[in-house]
Length: 144
Image (cartoon, rainbow, N blue to C red; front, side, top):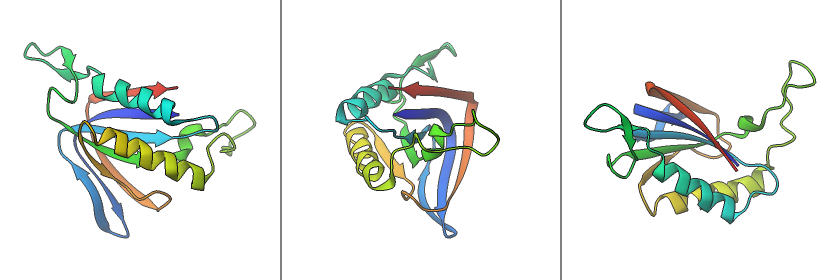
């Protein structure tokens, strides 16, 4: 499981020209799954996300987590996080989990995350247009 975490000032996701998810201050999570991912992987990375201290404290030091700043999350499924370009310029996605299995884990991931923070999502498998106003910029890759 991989999560690309981006600190965001405001972000949204559109499907068919309709906004289906939108946040202001918080995190955008691009989430990908691979074979072998389990509920334990999900719980581990949810814990990492909510405790990741990448928001500024009173002294301008990245020392606060999303709970402390009362931020929200925009979660986007992203199978391309498992792109492999070792054999040329056309990426292979063979390491990405198949859709039916991945959608179940993605839903579980978002449900687990909702226990802690407000979560908006895109639509799994849809052609999404994602607008991210990355704050910092601050982008971190989490993996299990």
